Amino acid sequence: MNITAVYPGTFDPITNGHTDLICRASRFFDRIIVAVADNPNKQPLFTQAQRIQLAEAVLADNPKVSVQGFSGLLVDFVHQVGAQAILRGLRAVSDFEYEFQLATMNRRLAPDVETLYLTPAEQNTFISSTLVREIAALGGDVTPFVHPEVAAALQEKWQK
Image (cartoon, rainbow, N blue to C red; front, side):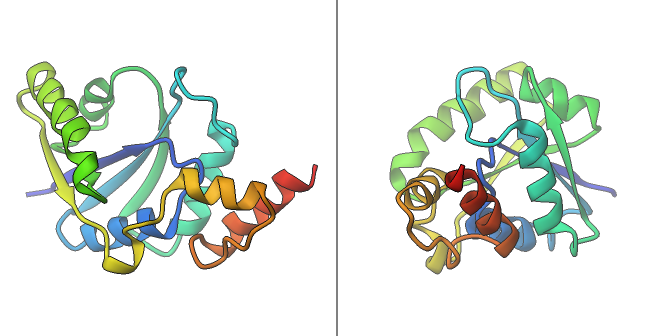
């Protein structure tokens, strides 16, 4: 059986936490589609095209992973790409309530799609895209938290 999971997010930017979760999940799925959201409610630092390019660069060595942009309902995208599961990460207990609401709504909209959660590796539990952006904006070193290509893109963004 060929099982495809969609890992959705804004990925603004993709972090080592995201990458770790994707790599570990690739042991359980035949294919993972990293779905880079074009969320009109957020004002990302990077354009959707830039976020896709960065994710592709970071994940290029994993043959099970592809990156695609999407907008609209996640469950529609999941059906469009023929996936059976939505992959999500839970960093802390505080994430659970929101994630539970999302999973319940997605199940209501698409009962044939399962939501599965992975927790981050211990060294990545505190990493978030928001914190990485803030550190970069203030001139801090983000290299422990992101791929070198992402660090370079952040540095370039804040030097302008």
